[in-house]
Amino acid sequence: MDDLRGKRVYFLLITILVMIILLSNLGQNFKTDGFSTSFSLTNYNALYTRCNNSKSYEEYIKSSSNYIEKFLKSNGLKSIEKSYIHKYSTLLPNKKHASTLEVISKYGKVVKKYEYITDYFEDYRGAISPGIFRDVPQIIESVDLNSVKYKSSIALTNIYKDKNLYEIFNIDIKLKKIGISAVISPIQEGDLISPSNLYNGTYYNYQDGLTKLLVSHTVYDELKYFTSKGYEIRIKSGAEIKETTLQNIYGVIEGKNKLYKPIVFAVFYDGEYKIDDKIHNIDINNLITTSLMLEVIRAVQYQKLIKPDRTIIFAFLSGYNQNKIGLNIMQGSLEDFDLVLLEEAGNSLNSVINYSKNQRDLTATAEYYLKKNQINILSKNIDLSSLKKYTNITTISNQSQINTQYVTKWGKFILDLIGNTCYNLDFLTGNFYKFRLFKNFIREYSAILSLITLCLLIYTIFKRQKPLT
Image: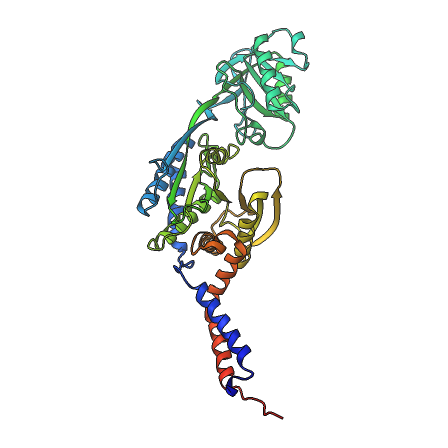
């Protein structure tokens, strides 16, 4: 007993360390280092090829969603309600035929032909319909349309200025009542596509609308001059609002414990928005995010013998350029879940976090693993009004090429987050995220802690007692 005198505290400390290391390493060992950048690039190339080969936005949606569906099936994920692909309809801009804008002389010759995109572009605001009209325009400057008398089927007007979409729609209805069939209106400055309502707009499905074009202010002044000289304007626009079918794709890995809420990892897969060969906006950022999420699925399912405690849903959403409508569809169809929405992940090491007040713990966990994987957090903003639970992580990037280092770090981050929130959960770690972080920290550094414990044990055994005085 004399040999233990003065060593009891050390043995107690060693016992505590051993128990902590042992308990932290109990359960299934989910590996977070299985992410392959080369496999992720394979997915990216497949999606990018579909972008280039698709003739329209709808065609790309079908082609890419089929690729994602086959990937989910081949990796053993389950569907929701007997289907991976879930369709929904929405109103979107479409182009029925090409558009032109020309000035015609009194003898029927083309005096001037304007350049598409540079000089004019389709106007998708308000009540629109495709059409072809030729006439000497009338200039409408009064906002009091009740006092305007019909003189021409084509109007040159700037009365849309500073009006919202609903106000523009009502103006269009009044113009139709006057007898106007086509409208040319100016944009004060900047490009013509951004204010056209092509992206992120509210659309009206009106059967007999106006044929409308936007022009630069210089072109507008020219057209007014030609009009004053009696020249005709020939306007042709293929712009229309069409009911379009979009698709969300879901894949599920079922968890062992149904008491835990499912967690959804969501990305947008439709960075492509193609109206015609000239308006072909390939946003590679979303393609990169989609490709690395697919590789995360492969890395998780490579360990399919290790079943998560919590159900994981991988969601690939559409409608990114249309107010992210696919996200609203998903939130309305799934019940009681936590959400991690990744936008443009893999494109930069600078991120911004937006989250709801009901998801502070999951956001804190994500923040920990972002820093662990050397991904900077530029700002963190809480939404106190939303009742929905979400953590939205977006990157800040202007790059046009893939950086494999960024892809790898983001892939590792997602695997870390999945491992922490879905695997090796018990009552404490499943309900208190700080216990989860502590357990994973001990597991990650268990080799170092074991070495420290061994050194402490050796020191304690050979520690010489001080002689009694």
